[in-house]
Image (cartoon, rainbow, N blue to C red):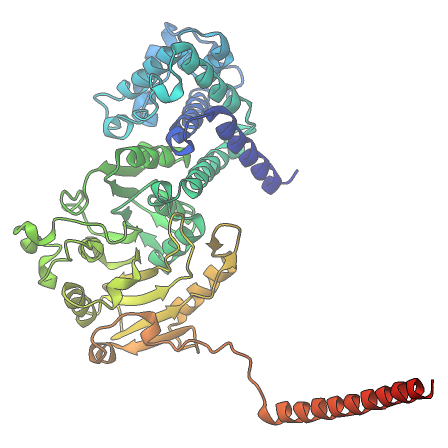
Length: 519
């Protein structure tokens, strides 16, 4: 079985567990139990791998919790891994007897609390605290009685226990991470807006990460101000071999559940606690990292046209993020507030790629004034229009706005990628070939009929600072070209054939009538 086939089979099994076990519980509500169990198994096996260090003579799972060796390694283990797990708390230990453990739900709750508390007083405390907050083993979602809860929890544990990830040191990290992303994407796809609003499909994430990191040999750090489940940051992780990300991965997320998902996702992709900093909070009103060095790479898919306080807070117009534009984004549409936030966090050598609602590129009022600020200061490198139905929960054909503070010309590039997609059952997707084509257009900045155009900023100003791709790239006429002369000739031939056919019919009719009169 190839690695692709193995991954496909693993994903099929995981989704089957999720469907079989949840019963009457809504899939979106139940996701955290499957995701959390997968994470629990990962950190257990990751911890075992660290303790044993590929020494086959050591079997950490067989240690007693009061083994004298544990106290000798505990402090160093927490400093290195960020947490500690006793042998009795390991996933394998709990899963083995889950089906006959009458105290399973309370045992799990205690274990998760201990793992989180093990980081107290250590540098990893903020990264570990609350990781299992959404894995509520006492929730009535699991059942009305303790027995019902334990039965369902045992089924999840047993299901995840049976999954084959092969030898941890060889490929487990990739498989765990991929399995996690697979589950999140499937839950998002099946939950509509409630799930899709925080998840950027992997193919789109790949394009955004490549745009932000294009031709940067090194970046100091990468940032997502609306991190969601961390999918955009993780695409940058997959560029790690080609790009040295010196200080790691940073993000902020307003939703508590999604914030936990993002942190779990970092661990599952082997990004240790000291290489990421995901914070909880409102990015627009309570931004973190503002006092840090600006970021060389920023990726983001902020919520479309979300409401915010805007001008109702008179202090915001003096905020260093928004003041340079001289105007705040409308209260009913915070899109440009995120854009200006990103711009203020961007380094002089960096680049940002932001998914944007298309309306902000042509509407008037405050949004026009912000576009004027961006264009006149030469911050807009490229605007890319994507195909419709690429995202879960919405069919909107969104745009990608690429910002840069180191442009060498006073032109803005427009790319029409609306026809670049592969149609699948429920959504359209960007293939690797489509991403390569877009990146080639982005890199060259050459004009290409129907696909790309680089426009002088003065011409954009003359066009009322309209940044819509359709305003600068002619749509290709795909209608069939008809040669009138050829068509006329074909019509003459057809008419002649019809005339001949009528004559032939007249002859036959006359013969029939003649034979009938003779009779």
